[in-house]
Length: 283
Image (tube, rainbow, N blue to C red; front, side):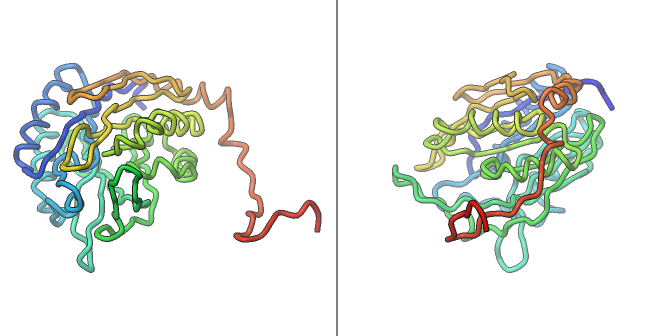
């Protein structure tokens, strides 16, 4: 396994013009490559994001002929870098889509794919409404990709609020976990940094979280793409603007941090409290 990984997060504000988004991303990928990136990570829906209620179906296609995948696969092969397509809308049976994250190697091959498990359905106090389940079919499988840098666990956005998924990925061999997102500004200001640092600390994993930024109709993405080490230290924060942030990951830190706080070894089975029942001191 390689002892270190140079990783870059791309922070963009995608629109509905897939080709323009890809041209913009090409400039950012070239910049990251020039700075020595081995792995370049795009945000959730980084290649196409619509406005308001339409964002989850705009740009959907079957995977094998998806224009974003075809373009980025060729680009990975051309540039010799690994590319995480944070997510893209892929047609699924029954008229819905899946929110799919794909990891491409430096030959342009898809080495792993993950369909977002947890769907964001909420009415925010500021009037924003999200109903991912109306158009998206949830995934049902956790995924760890085998790479030259060890296991990389794949997640997407709202998954970050479900720590059991992240512990499962760490126990399954992940030392790095990706969290591409288009996190809402309202919740991002309060929770983004806290959630991602918590997932890093709980799992002893590096967290790589590229996020969209800016306005998409009446919705606004938070930005602040983050790279975090297994101790919870923020190595890079993109702030609110479009751009690229990068960091060099010393992969020996994974075992060092886990040996200092071996929480993954201390999980124990227990009986959960049944809904609607109070716990009893003795029975």
